[in-house]
Length: 128
View 1 (cartoon, rainbow, N blue to C red):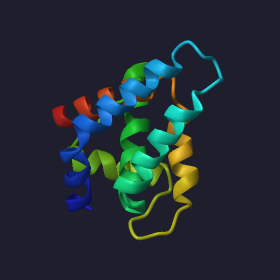
View 2 (cartoon, helix red, strand yellow; view 1 turned 135 degrees about the vertical axis):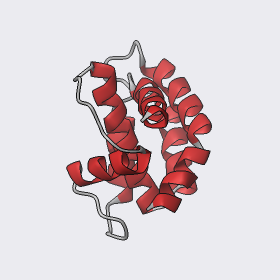
View 3 (spheres, helix red, strand yellow; view 1 turned 90 degrees about the horizontal axis):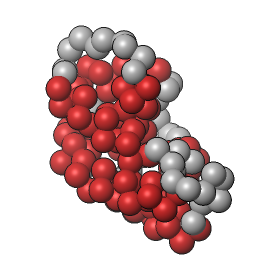
């Protein structure tokens, strides 16, 4: 799993930049997502990441959401340990099949905050 996490972290700047742009398209549109931008983001995640990487990315996003909301939960260990905890929280296992399109959609539904969640998630994981 360490190699998968490292691969995702190598693309963190691109993930943050693209999702922040996507967030800007959605910030003032309560539930009306710009379909063209949605399709671009969907294709980015679908073509560039396999199922295990999507699970890692989604775990980082949800971790970032918790950091953003200030839940105050402290995590001991390094980024690999924290991501492993979040993988378990989401009932994800490496090499286990998922519905990739459903999981990508779960992330993209957070359109109004997705970039922020990734920014917080990656930043906090680099800090632990």
